[in-house]
Length: 477
Image (tube, rainbow, N blue to C red; front, side, top):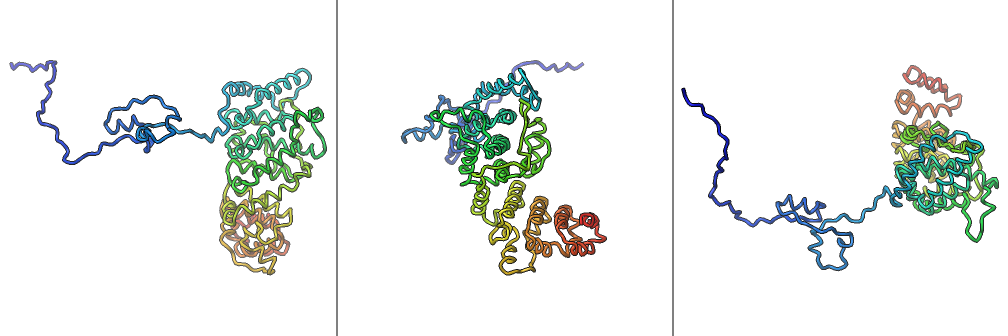
């Protein structure tokens, strides 16, 4: 029998290569870690096959020497420069204050919209006073914090007119930074909605009790009218840039509505109200519903006039709406207005400006926004009495695009009669059968039909009869 080959454990003999390693025939430049690449020097050294450098901790001052000595050494050092974080423009909120706010959020939720009386009401008022004391000096950082901003929004409906003025005064001249901020813009929006009630009372010479107890030597708290004047003066120079910002645009549109007396404002809660689509986006509404934002006072005494058509505005603020509109017309060119018209953020603003032009009697003037969007049609009608026009591409694109239909409807519903007749005959007559069956244009056609006279309705029925979308138009007529 052959012997079995048994594999024995042992050290494996390594092969000895006596040959010398090949030397490069050309000079090889060894890569050196560089700060300009943005790679940490330890990682750069590892990739280059060099020893990892050991560096002592350095500060920002070490990374930016006062003189030119040691520049080569400084280039090999890697430091993060001073970081300006736009998410916290007023600094990170004090951790203790933040923890306090988070601890009281559930209590605020439980009390929102629930009536109170006697000792319970007094307890809630004391609770509110202690919260405001903790907030003092941290208003800006709390308004821009992702967690405490919503708590501040829940808290503000419980404030009196005096408390709302205190909050507004604490924001100082930082309104532009606030409305450009993802969370701060919502806080400003809530504050403005509540401030509309205060403005209504100030216009009727109704003041909080603290007003008569102020010490002139210690300084006076600005009225809400003065605060709004300050807000507008601060924002006016840059309003043409802010109006297209996804965060700044909704508060600015709300400001325009507040400056329109008797105009119903959107509610703070999740209930649907008039003009809701002009202010908050669907995404914002959905988020507020998931957060169960009620927009109610913890004292249970909600008597808002912002949803009333009788809302008044102080005389000192009456001219500002036109001033803002003129600043926008001067700051934005024709191409920018047209681009905003088909933009989800800009379109509601364009619709509001069209409405204000009609209110102030400027819609039929040369260079008006109506003239810009109709590509000169208003000028030709008013100066040359022209009635026949050639269809232009911009209005055609508005009528058939998803984002442009809202603006198209506004143009048809707000246009002066001569302008409406010219638009209807140029862009709709002879094309109604096709437009009535279009998934977007049919809404625009329906809006225009509501303004037709009896004789034009008969022609419309003849044109769309037998068309798939014609039945709805006939019912609308």
